[in-house]
Length: 551
Image 1 (tube, rainbow, N blue to C red):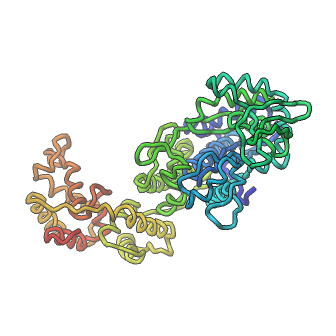
Image 2 (image 1 turned 180 degrees about the vertical axis):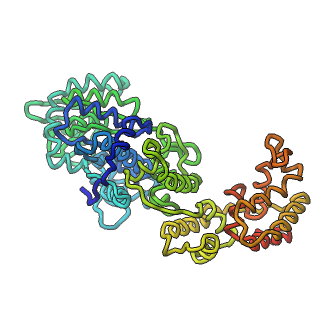
C-alpha cells in the first residue's frame, strides 16, 4: 500500500444535500453503489478495483481508469458522509502470458525466446532494478499513481496466485469446472470449444502459459491433468501458482474472491460483461457495479494500444502539461470516444484553470458539478492564473523565448507583482509552454506572405496601435483591431452586427493576423495577446512582416 491518504471532505449540510441531487456522472455511479451497500450491508470496506495489463508501458487510458474510479469513490464518500471505509485496489494481470512482443521495447529479439511466459517471468528489456518485464511496467504505473497522490493498494496477480491468496477460489473453480464451461462454451466458436479450458497451466518444463484442454480435472484432489508441449501428460495442483485462469473466468473469479464492489472498464470489455458476471455468480460472488467508458483514439482515430505504443504515454503528457489537466480530460464525457494526442493538451490546460478560478464563487450544487471538485477529491487549491496557457504559447512564438526569464519579463510587465517566486504555478506553466512550443508548434510554423489587402490592413493596424497609450488593456486594443477590419469587405461578417449597426468582423481577420504575424492558424483573443506581448513589440512584428523578414 502506498503512503498517500484520503483527503478530508466538506461534510457541511449544503454539500451533503447537493450530493444527493448532483447530476455529475461520478455521483450518478456512486448512488448505484450506495443502493448495493444498503443490500449487502456495510460491515466491510467498499472495494473499488481497477485492472492493468502490463503487456506494455502504462498509457493514459490506464491512468484514466484509476482517476475516474477515484472520482466515483470520492462521490460515494460524500454521499455516505464518509462513514463507510473504502479501498481502491489496482490489480496487475502480470501472470498473463506474453503473446506478442510490444513495439515499444528497445530490442525485440531479446524477448523472442520468452514468448508465452508469464509477464512476471519475462526478463526486463529496459535494464535497471526490475527483474522482469512485468515488474518494470508495474513500477512505471505505480510511479505515476504515487506522483498524482492516489490513495490505492497495488496487487500483483503473480503474488496472489503464488502466495496462495487465490487458492480457495482456484479450488472452487475446479469444483465448479462444469458450470464454468457451461457459461463459456456458448461464447466460443466450434473449433475453440474443442480445446477450451478455463485453467491455463504453467508448463513445469518450459515455463510457458499453455492454452491446452484438460484431460482431467480432479476437484477432490484439486489437480488438473494436461498434455505438456513435449507430449507428456502432467498433473499439477491448481493452487500455488501452477495454473492461472483464462482472462474471462479470471475477471469473475477475482471479483468473487476479493468481494469487489465496483469496477469500470473500456467499451471493448462491454460484450463480455455478462460473462464476467455469470462466472462471478458461479463462484459464489455478487458481481460488482460496472461503468463502461469509451476508448481513447490516437491522432489517426485508431484505438490506443499499449503494445503499439500509439497515442500518448503518461510521461509525454506530463512533459507538456500539469497532471490536473490530464485528470480534467478523464473527467469530461467518459462515455464519448475522444482523440488523445498532443494537440488536445493546450485546451485541456486552459479549461482546467478556468474551472479552478470559477469554483470559489459557485453554490454547492455547481461546485459538485465542477470538474475540479472531482479532480482534487474536494480539496481545491487556491491558484491564480493571470495568463492562459494558449497565450503563453503565442508569447513564446512571438518572442522566440528559449528560457523562462524572457517570458517572465513580459508577464511581470503585463501583471505587476507576478514573479516566478510569487506564482510558482504560473512558472510551472511557463516551462510547459516553452517545451510544447519547441516540440509541436515551432516545427509547424508557416508564415503567410501578405497580399495587398493584408498589407494595407496591417499598416492601418500599426497606425492605430501607435495611437494607443502604452498601458492600454486588452479590451481597448481589441476594439482597435476590430476597427481596422470593419471597413474591409473581406473581413466583414454579415451575420454579425457591429456597434454602428453595420456588419461585424469575421474570424478570418484574426486567423489572418495569426498566420501573418505568428505563423499559426489560430490563437487566443488577439487584443489580450498584444497587451501581454506589448504594443511596441507587436508593431515591430508588423514591420518585419511588411518587410518580408518573418519566417
